[in-house]
Length: 376
Ligand SMILES: [Zn+2]
Image (cartoon, rainbow, N blue to C red; front, side, top):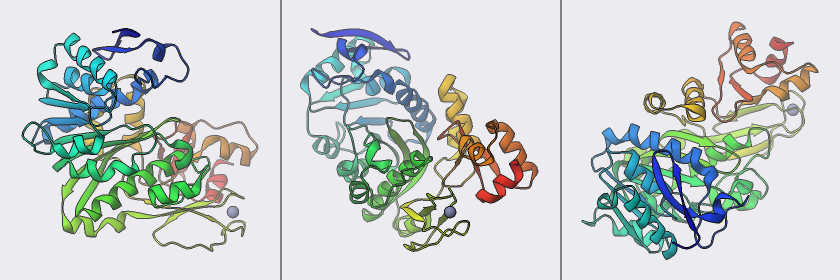
């Protein structure tokens, strides 16, 4: 195909637009391919392999497949998945995807279509049935498509949903964030975890409206995207409990104090410095990682993926973290290493762990003033 070249990602050959490998921002035309998202696709291969034994129907739908990078990698590298459905509105991208499927000898298990994403998802598989796994990796926000994704997923199936509207979720446009995700962002040092929790609560609230419940299995975030894996169950009683995992994170932009609370309170004075605290959320305050699932993903992982998964396994259930450099600037000392901070906090009787959201951060149940005391 003109303007396309062959590349290899994971164990899969892919036909991709030539310019996508050289331009800093990959062009949308003739088709979109982002080489930097390899990390995200590597993790999705691990996640789908770990989830496959739980599936009733081993099918996967990829609503915004583009040149098929994720779909064809799944067809090639996840033998447990029996059929992969890829769809995109761009016919040139889909043509490249079909050719890549041939290159990997997986055309038999791949179906590609050119359609509007919700029409594709709701049409179902060859038999008109829902899918075992549904992936959505849009440009920008997934907000307007989450209903379709959830409705297209089988009971006990898996959804994987990406958001790339990171400036919105990180707090640059709070009104846009509030209307898309039903919660307020925090533009601060742990804003990426807040972003993942806003995305998760939006998916959970949408599910509950459809009499469905979600169970987050694994999440991760980088500069460019956030991504949530969640199991979906048909469960009215589960849907009724959705608010037991939704709350708020309060943050003081004056001294850095933070805490989580179930209740919304607009006017809260910081207990350390008396400044008015800002509200993050509503957002998901429950677990983001199912440890057994993450451990299974980690078995086959290496490199950066392994590092992220090991941190997720260790991570304690607190919906925010502290950065090592925040603490060292308060102490006016050289930065302590994160393992050393964790060791000291534990020795002082607090819970403490790494965080998978930031290798320069740590989680603890200790309040900011206690952390300073312990590390001084
Ligand atoms: Zn304060």
